[in-house]
Image 1 (spheres, helix red, strand yellow):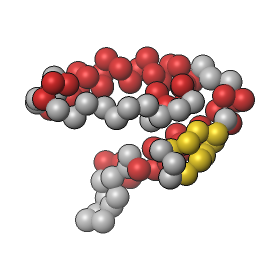
Image 2 (cartoon, helix red, strand yellow):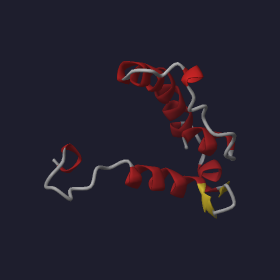
Image 3 (cartoon, rainbow, N blue to C red):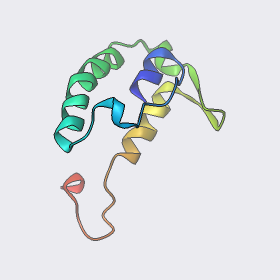
Length: 89
C-alpha cells in the first residue's frame, strides 16, 4: 500500500511463493523491518498534492492517496471482538 501511494499506482502483487525467502516469522519481521521505515519516510515527505492524487485500486475503487493510507490504517487494527486488544490500550 505504501509503495502504491508513493508511486501513484498499484503494481504486481508480492511474490507469495517460497522464493520470497519468508519461511519463518523472523524472516517476515526482518523483511518488513528492512522495507517499511524507508517507505514511511518517503510517504512523510510527500506534498499535499501528491497525497491528494487519485489512485486506482485494481479497478475496484479510485481514492485519493491519503484515503488509501487511512484504509490501510483502519484495516491494520485488531478488532476487540473478544475483549480489548493491544491496539485499544
